[in-house]
Image 1 (cartoon, rainbow, N blue to C red):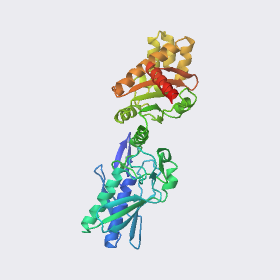
Image 2 (cartoon, rainbow, N blue to C red):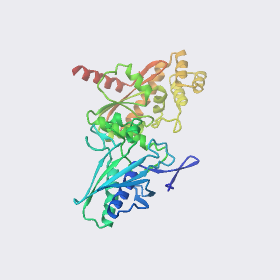
Image 3 (cartoon, helix red, strand yellow):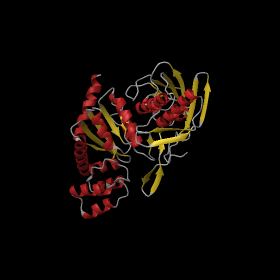
Image 4 (cartoon, rainbow, N blue to C red):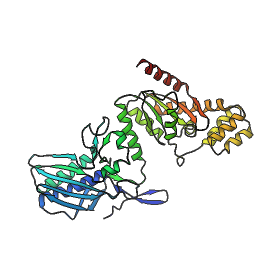
Length: 382
């Protein structure tokens, strides 16, 4: 049965789905009921952290001596999700010992690096799904008046294959996917999943250092490899468009020093206090460039040309005609520094470096220069 809960995205209504964690809890509820009654229930249900009840059929079931298992088919709704349609199994073995013990089997990753939700060595079944599984199993144990407990093993036969398409290998989860979900529900095209992934990586790196280079994506990563920062022992995190969220998370995680390295097309938005740099949220590149050009002495005709320029590189080309590039870039960077420091709220030092794919290095803030100098000095002391 389909999960019938919808969210609006623009003019469309999109159907929500449920997480791998919810599937694991549903499968565990069915498996323990099967173990205690000898019958596979027609349907199983769990209440999610979002306050929505999920009820579904059992896709597969079976038993073998003392082990009983059920599988739930993952339903991601209208979300684009690599795990949609896969089977998530729970195998339950009853025990005389009270309590619910949870582990991962085939296709569930194992944590190999610190800084993740689970300690090194544990199955990558996050805290919320573990709680959901425990609650679902204990509810059935209580309803059936069983005085012992249960051992639960979650397995995902396709997990190892799917893991290759995720961030898991980079984050230190090996052998399969993670069983995740903060509220049990998948909202289609949710940006929160991306932000959560960034936070996991930042938390992991915070185990080793409180200094970080942040960049939106591949352009920044490529630029860094050819810059004087290449080889410096400072980790790099890609934040996509979520600059504001990344700065907030850095403060919460206790970072002390950040360097933002970004293409001028992204950086100019930051000068306008745009903290989600995706074009659907805000743009203003031409307007911000034009305003700073005017401040730096560009005449009306030049400002009109910049306002109508197709790209930031085209704007720089126009500035070069009048010898205004350095002035305008520095003016933009001064505003970038102001906006970054305002968002950081004194929690950490931050500076900015910007570049163009056409023109290369364009400029950096005074604070960026100070941070980079300190890193080179640290590197020389090692």
